[in-house]
Amino acid sequence: PTDATGSAMTRQLGVHSLNPRYTFQNYIKGESNQFACAAALAVANTLGGTSFNPLVIYGGVGLGKTHLVHAIGNHVLQSDRSKRVLYVSSEKFTIDFVEAIQKDRIAEFSNFYRRVDILIVDDIQFFAGKEKTQDTFFHTFNELYQLGKQIVLSCDKPPKELKGLNERLLSRFQSGLTADVQPPDLETRIAILWKKSAENGVELPHEVVEFIALNITSNIRQLEGCLISLLAKSSINHRKTDLELAREVVRSIIGEVRTHITVEEIQHVVCEHLGIPEDLIRAKTRKQEIVNARQIAMYLTKELTNSSLKTIGLHFGGRDHSTVIHAYQTVEDGMSTDPVQRNLVHQLKSKLELSIR
Image 1: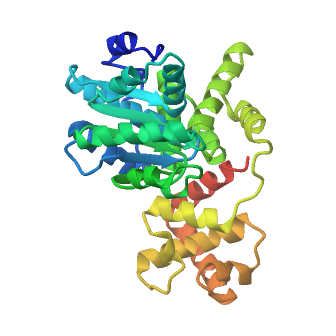
Image 2: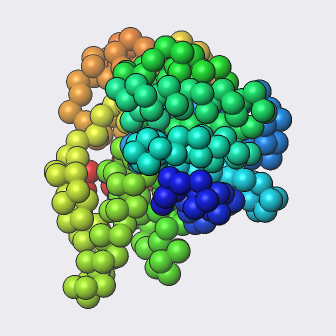
């Protein structure tokens, strides 16, 4: 609310502070956010009709939590314009509360926040240390909950790990469903870059998209910032959006671009590409598709790292150096006679090498 007084607040009570750009339709889904997205959609479709109350979505900075909670509000309003949806940051809730105290309008403040059908509060970790604000929010929470209204919260870590919040409030936060949003995996990062570049009317070279996705791994905000910087430099300096420019932009964001590949990364890329669980590549199973994946990963590890044969074997379930030699020779022989195998290995090798160019 821009004003903590009753009449001004009430006039705004319909749509409040929702960003219409944040929808489920343009939210890129992947393994890292699949559960949180499904829970959010369930809440939006059945307002107050699930046991997901409150719904708490948590995760690190820039992972899409705010997008998801806005999407809930926008979806609700799209389905029923009469619903009273209120989105507010914890900071704004605190500011409104302080203004209400100063203007002796506590009753109107409470009435405003308790008349909604769905209350969405972003970044609840910032309630820490604000005892009076916490007390007020606790009573607001209870009132809405008892009326069967939906409450959606976001924070940067699981509720049980939040510091500076009183126990009764934490207990309420943990009484519904908690869903986490993890850093996006490679495929999701690539999908985000394709979508954002398309929104900007730009078709980037595939190797540029992969290079950025392989190097910017921590969060979506940084990923999108990198893309914006790339497009800006290309436009302002009249340069091609090629790998050279991408390297410059990535280096300016994260410092030095990675210069080596790890065994774990090789295992991850091979398993992800072939659709095999990573733990199986290190297991004792002799299932042929697993053996083939393991041998290819061993081959690439020998080709792309300085690891000794003994070290490579240890990374693959404690196998000895002779097994690594056999795997390397098997893959090399297969590449000389089977074009499908040759193309597969070259594709995987190029993907891995791209991450350190």
